[in-house]
Picture 1 (cartoon, rainbow, N blue to C red):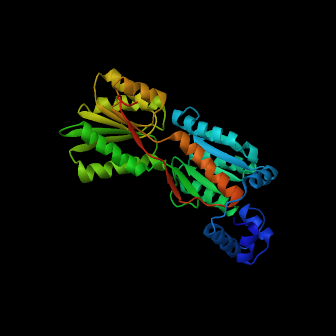
Picture 2: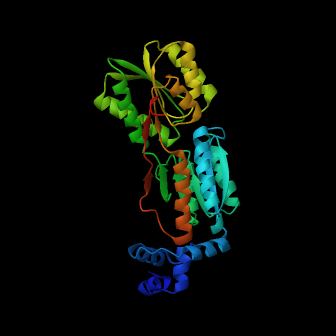
Picture 3: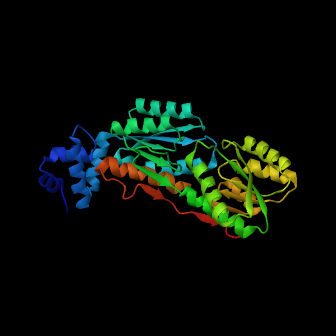
Length: 337
């Protein structure tokens, strides 16, 4: 079994230098650190778990967690995954400090700053897609605080890894489902969360790409943003249906599904509806036949896996095997829910 001494001998450094690189503590020349990590990965080094527990207990790692929307059922499930994984890691000296924020740039910046003041060693973040957040992530990385994005990613940042669904592919899947579930010329209305959340915009991009290239009989009537708010979703869906009597289908690309479905029921119309996620209110509407299909993306695993990646890196210096860590989509209809 490979030891720290083996790595130190190959790198031509002391065991203390290897230890500082593996445990992300103390100043080490960047080129030396890179050489050490190349040797670690080449030898597939895995530290002794008992040793990890002892070292981590001394270090007492604090992980910051920032997720959207306090009353968003999807992110509630992500948080459950985080909390249960955090319990598993308590013996290793790990604690989590959580923040729930709305889709608001300043709220997220404030949450990041507050966690930095708490002295976090790593950050798990569902990011607002804005250059200011990208800059803040890069500042954390400069301070040797690794960042994992969860559920939604951010353009151009130096975050260590992303855990979540392939949202472009999810949009393509939704387009395919609309094709299978409809016939003739179709007008489609879209209700999304926020254009400043990358997963929402990428789902729509995937949907539009597939409709334009393969299913041109389905035309998009309008795209509206509900900011993942049920009341706003209800009002927007009513407005959309009133303005567009020819709409045959609705795509909910984010939260706000229950409010939107309530508006549909009150309208007396029966559009084909495709949504994301298996939150309780969506499952109920699926069982009632209001929703035609929903695309599930394993929120519990997203939370658990993100914390795992930070644990592995902070305790052993092990980078994720891949930058993009996708969870699988599954399609749920009334008959298999």
